Amino acid sequence: MHIFIKQKALEIGFDACGIAKAESLDEDAAFLKTWLEAGNQGEMQYLERNFEKRTNPTVLVPGTKSVVVVLLNYNTAQTQPLEAPRIARYAHSAIDYHLVIKSMLAKFEAEIVHKFGADSVNSEFQHSFVDSAPILERRWAQRAGLGWIGKHTQLIAPNIGSYCFIAILLVNKELEYDKPMPDQCGRCTRCIDACPTIALNGRSLDARKCISYQTIENKKSVDENIRPKLSGFALGCDICAEVCPWNKKWAIPHQNELLKPVNEIYNFQKVDWQTLSQEKFGIIFKNSAIKRAGFEKLKENILMING
Image 1 (cartoon, rainbow, N blue to C red):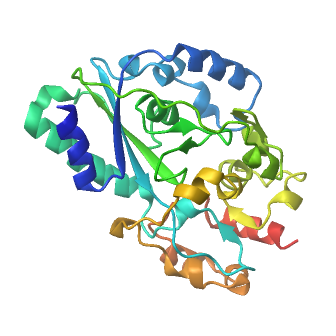
Image 2 (tube, rainbow, N blue to C red):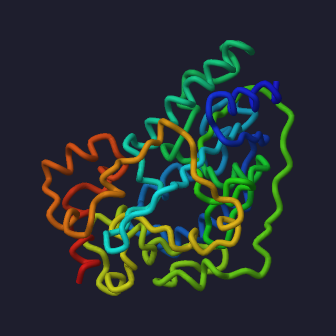
């Protein structure tokens, strides 16, 4: 069964697939509790809810025995003009990656159910996820043998790097499980050293200092002490990933037609972003992940990086 699942994942278009035994993540639960108590989540209060479900998929979806994890490469071949406000690579596609991956997951699940029966999943609960549920995606990817969590707190996957989306399907069948991948960062601290806001600390991230958090999740204006350190990013941040030696070795542009870019991201000059109207924003980015930040937030961020 596990061979069929992995083959189908690749046929559908995912770049990697691994499987882990569903169980409580006790060490992660202890870390998360301490992390939350320190206030590292900032305004992301949703991280405080559903604590037991977040650290135990068998509580999140009753009957779960296996965690099937898939990866999708989103690294881009093109780059933005040098003076243009920077948009993190994950948001370059014309169609929001959530929509792309949900469609792929639906096909993936249909293949599994067709082959092994409707009882393969618990249809009474949401059981497939991409950034949409209380589940620790990166940890499950590591436990499923797909990579390790780097010092920049992102998954680093062999032959992909850290420019990858993680999606999960919870299955009610016992399968053959992959071995967790050991850490391979060694003594390297390039990501920590490169972070302009000192948001990284070993294996932890203070979201309140993170440029990505400040330019997207923080619904208020970017904190005053962060503004001079945005490093040209108006939405998200790729700095820690760009300096990672494993990305330099492995990261290659994706070939997924469903993740075709918004052409304006590579064509817009600085002045185009500065004069972008709300009407034009709605047309160009109508299906893009950029819409999550919203027009007003994006324009405000652009003004800040331009001083």
